[in-house]
Length: 197
Image (tube, rainbow, N blue to C red; front, side):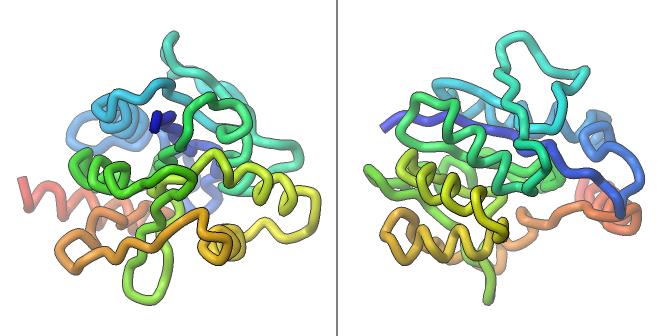
């Protein structure tokens, strides 16, 4: 099995009011931190999914454009699945600045041929830090031609088809999935990080 990693950076950041990629955590922008995590996985290919190519895109990172009109994270994941040549895709949202490389490695290690890994936290899935098999592409393409673009529906379909399996996240790792959707989220995260450091 082989891995491609994609950083999902296509959100419009309405609630945050500014580009999340440029928010700072521990002295570095979100994008720098997240790309650094993905590089440590030694993927065959590293991609960034966004509406337009970001200014910070590094030379060895492949840009994959989100579909127009925008279809949320499903569009970005579909674009990456269509562009990759690997057996699996690890997707990571730009606004999960607590994620750790060891956790991502553990997810990847649970993948099997033709089957990805969907983190499950409490009563819900965490599809924006998950592993998708190449075989997920037809499911994504079919959804994009309709009027349902929910990641919940997408992942439920993959689970039912045996193309993903749940991985329950314990209480100690739940914090890794905290995301920053608003200035208040970012403030809480920054305070928490400072106290932890």
